[in-house]
Image (cartoon, rainbow, N blue to C red; front, side, top):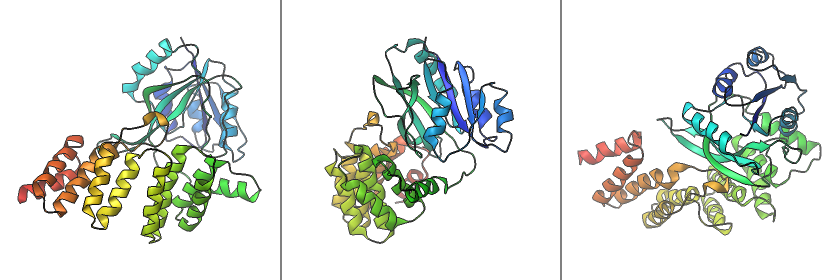
Length: 355
């Protein structure tokens, strides 16, 4: 049976950490905590779960801190979690079964990461992350921010999911400041870091600066396809917010040059045409979204609603605007079959019932 070292870096996590460790303590074989400077009760709390608690001098480098936690591990695999992550009770049996059955030649286990949820608590934003990593010097984190372990060796995908359930707000400026400090020091941002730097600028509403970073990234011959496609999406929204709608559409369509369509991008293109009253074009793109398979194992960001619920709901709007009420009603019912609790679906249902 595979043995697991749970390796965590923490700072001032007294609100979250017990919840996380309660969900994991009896599933892993050791717990390693690297504290990066807590001033609250974090160290006291984690000491109830493990005696392997270490102090670390923060260097504005998440990869370095995670590597410090991995360097203390002695089990077969290292597993990382953030303090505001949790393994739900529904995943426990699958987790234990995987430990018992994992082939000895597996190097990395990818697991789902649910980071946003709808009004019923269902995941609305997910992607795969490296979660169990063979404990050897070959596998180490890279990237001061949005750190990653580049996949290599035998990689397997599991449907086990870790949920990110943050309580309270963190420091919204932390990541951007780290990038700006790196740039000021003359450090080169490799393509993945460049992509995430553009996202940080976008989050801070520095849209023109974000566009400049994304355009440089998109023109580069380097970079991961999924990041290229997602950069088109975020860059397009920057153009929208600057009132440059034609540039936004061109950027969305540019994503088709990197790979087959993603439902997420199809819905955004459909939204453009819907908002401009071109319902036939909007219908084409929403129907394309419905016929686009999920590429879950691409490790890109997945918005599950874009593969059924959103296009059904928007097709309802398109056909209603065109006066085809029966067809519109049918699409609303199909949206309701995906999310019977959706306020949008229920609002539309009342509307059609009143006609």
